[in-house]
Length: 246
Image (cartoon, rainbow, N blue to C red):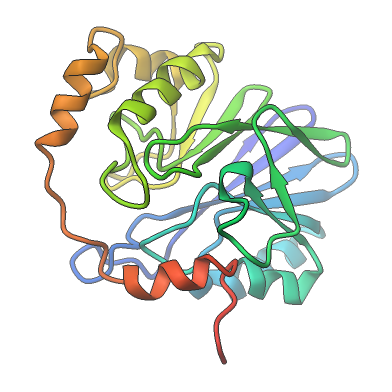
């Protein structure tokens, strides 16, 4: 848990993920609460963890007002619609997903702000992992989805992904944030919780400041990863904000 004068962040790990059989392993969801009003937002919930997340929201006495998605996930089904049914929270996707996703209430475009209580979070369009990726920034923190990981980055070979676009998103958007900004990624497979922009500028294995755009593109072209195991189920569901037939 991370706390500032205005907001509190609770980090929620995917308790069901097993990397050997299910590539949801180490998926991260984030519950951010405005300390004064107790209004809250939830970033990237996982369908299988909805009961846990709702229980925590109730235990903390929070009023959930928004569910935010960083992108259309290929490795798991979002819990956004299920959580909306239980809480009335509005579903938010980045502006790059507009025209592709149905069931969202808000499409937040680059630079736009979303307020919950006296806290405001800003959308940063960061395509590259997919065409519609969006990161979300608070003062002192940024939620990067699958664009920027701790010492790595998301794949760029699915859903309109582009190594060139991802490099530009990181260097022209995320790396312009203050060095002390805490990076909260969408996944980590090594048990790490967070990093900072300054650390990633220096130590990211593929995106540090000593690596050129051409070098990064070449590095990504040599990476060959299997399709996510649940992709054929997850993508159609997530294009409907996680609404699936019961």
